[in-house]
Image 1 (cartoon, rainbow, N blue to C red):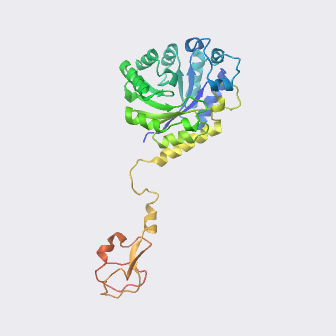
Image 2 (image 1 turned 180 degrees about the vertical axis):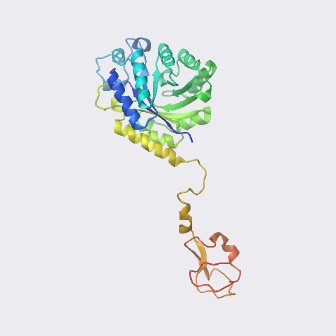
Image 3 (image 1 turned 90 degrees about the vertical axis):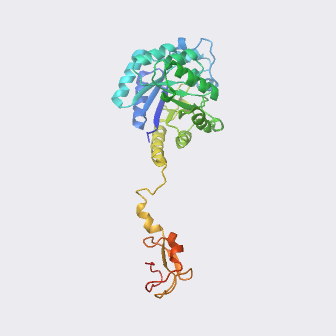
Length: 334
């Protein structure tokens, strides 16, 4: 089975500092994640000057600061992207970034990005979806705030533009930071898999690591999770992100879990074959049995080890005559 693709979401937790961004890449690589993901945008293309902050942004940043001012400080220019891309190559981890505007799609395409991550806010952006669809590259589509119909429409737009559904992985997602447990609704991920016939995954904004782990157990093939160097850093997303130790723990647990899920075939495993003869039982003499005596439920029983005649042969043994004497606990032999 193909391994779960784990995306360590750095997002904007670099705070506009390229050295901090490199440290995030180092942490993601050390955790064992497959990719580290940033966000690509220009404030002028992303939002108007009077756009309000989300509630969680108001709680985690300066309330007097506009969303535009907050976003402007978090931009990474093209040269910064190139530096981070090269740093990822040195560290052996895939560089990803979510584009938030048309120009950013072009920038990432020119940089040779292998997978395009479509953020939840762009799922109803027709020109944006058409542009990404025209690239005919692998896509990961986050579906926070969406109805099943909106997800289906987005998939159709991508397909019509040139990117088939087989190239798209759909991530169930809730965009509240942090997401209340009562709003996670992991079963919606399975609903999308069943109704839309798509590859599925999960983008997590809950506190802790248990929900992405549960998502893997339910069939997620991609997991995305925010992380930071420290929850105490200033910025909108740090408080709802994992710290390095937690990120590494999540990756370890997911890798263990995907091994434990196995291939679905029910059969004895190599590690337990040696236990069969120890814990299964054989048909043995319950008491002394003379040669010629008929086997019955009064003189037979079943006991460990399972190296003799299986108790599943009970009905074939009962009613026939002993071919020799048997001592109590002695395995019956024919």
